[in-house]
Image (tube, rainbow, N blue to C red; front, side, top):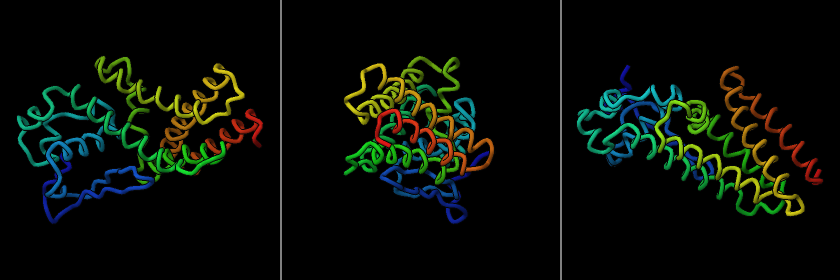
Length: 219
């Protein structure tokens, strides 16, 4: 079913922002000053974060944005190109939000709280799981370049958490804790969404952070 963003006066696309990260909430027509590329990426992100890579078709995007299907191909020759561009934008926004949220965070509890807050914002504001978390579950079916982009998002998450952990930990210990924190936040988003209970996110990630702090000797 088309989202029909182009029906001006009927709906609006609202871009919510928290910690510098923007989340599109579809309520109708896209702003006139938005570029066609941005409109297409916003429409694709909304669909993909709720139905996966195969939930997006160029025909749907054309109807969503009020342009011809051939125009979609002009901006993104292949669906793979669209997917890679979308993951790149999502990743840039995620880490920009994380940088803002962690600014001034001097202690490990503050840094991990910042990390948690960015995932919380995506879940609560947009009522959807992480784009890369959803695509990660579809890795076996994704084109190689989109697979690589998705994996890069996860690696950058792990690297960020590793850098936040105490230097007293060895490399293996940092890797294990970082991977566990990443997996826990992704899983908590999925569980909270599946059970329609956002409080589960706080419970799961809160416990995970407490255990991490205990292992690091900071609690």
